[in-house]
Amino acid sequence: MLGAILLMFGSILTVSWYGWLHLLAFFPIWFLFGFFWGVAPLIGMIKIVNAFTPIQFVATAILQVLWIVALRYLLEFLGMLELFPYYIIVGVHTGLLMNANDLRAERLEYGKNKKL
Image 1 (cartoon, rainbow, N blue to C red):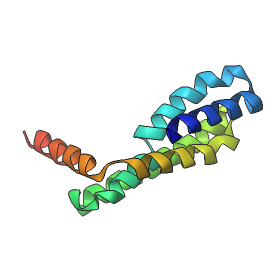
Image 2 (cartoon, rainbow, N blue to C red):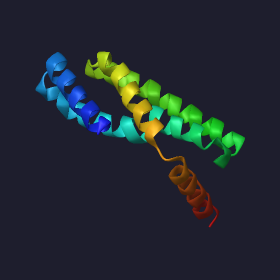
Image 3 (spheres, helix red, strand yellow):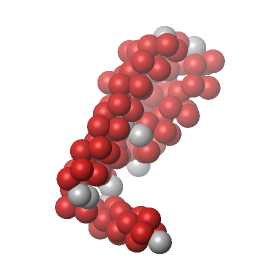
Image 4 (cartoon, rainbow, N blue to C red):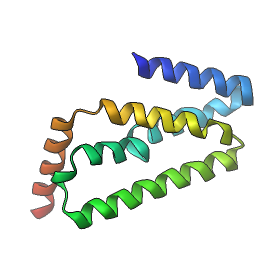
């Protein structure tokens, strides 16, 4: 429910600050950086830190931080830099709501499939 509210709030901010055309960039960025790249997976990783080897954890954490930096520069390129804190908040919200048991099972399944 809060995710839908955050999406609506971000859509309203985007339209009021930048116009309707920027919604074409807002939605895919919201989807990708709100769920798959950046803050949300970083928080999910921290929740299941024991499912990673130390090297895997550090490498993946660095990659997620690089995605956060890429988000900042992408928003700057699009002229939407003021929405950067909004995307961070959405990522934190999503990351905190991730189920640790599901994340751990997914990580272990990934490890099994990688060994094959």
